[in-house]
Length: 111
Image 1 (cartoon, rainbow, N blue to C red):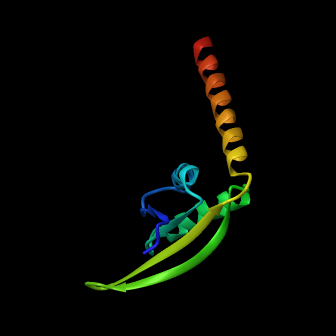
Image 2: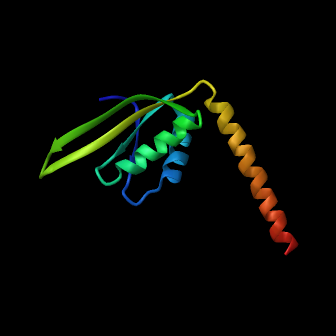
Image 3: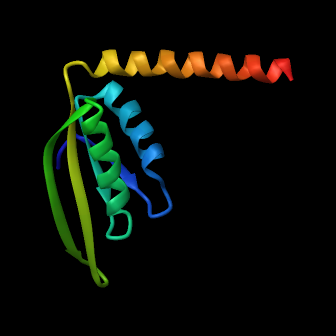
């Protein structure tokens, strides 16, 4: 069994939430698995693709696993690894979110 952390995607999750959780998990480890069932695999794929396009991660491995326990169960697993500039991108994004939050609060205070 591997010591890589597993981020499980539910069918009612959205890609933005999975991206956030994946970035938080990657702060503590070098690579993680994003695993999904048949219904949630598009969400997992969308989240991983967006993180890759933004430069946060690279793909390590993509596979499917089939389990036959009380019926057939299929699992889609994407192993991702953070890039060398992950921390820099993460900090820039956090600063941007903080700035936008302050601007939003200032707008609400004016009303």
